[in-house]
Length: 201
Picture 1: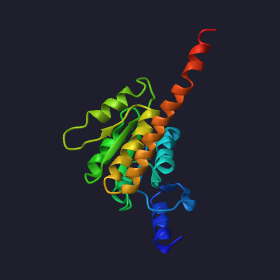
Picture 2: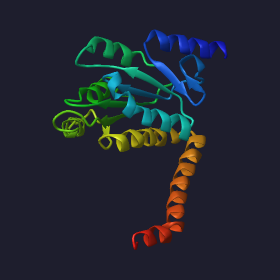
Picture 3: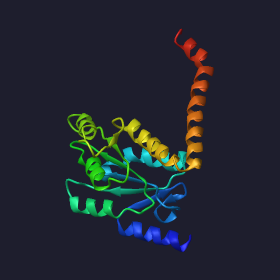
Picture 4: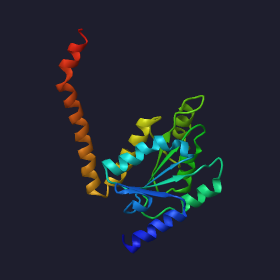
């Protein structure tokens, strides 16, 4: 590991974030984070691992993972977001309920695209989070994905598309990912007759 990479990891650790890359997590991770994935609580982590894993395994994109709660510790949120590594170019923020996190970040970082992932929880099952993200006022946009698992995966793909504008390698990986999805449909068609026959019994 180079001295520059060690310095990046040390700075990230001081800011309470964890670097994740195709090579590993934390001290075993490599590279500089291109995407911040943040959430209000570690209870959101199982959902957001779908975004983390899509970024690192499908597209080879290192990301920084961070907990930020605007309802419990707003001052720390401001400090974290103001002091992101310069390498971060896209932010993915997950929240449920009132879902203030993506909107607050969009206001704090007018220079970075923010992608919101509504979490399916509470009495309204994520509808409240979806609406609070979608209804951002003019001037503070949040690109909002679907509620739940599909939203987390799509947020990672959307972030990769943002990065692909300036990185041909990521563009190639996006095209390969699309081809893999097409092959899955072809495979399903190859086994379709036997599945249809099973319904006749």
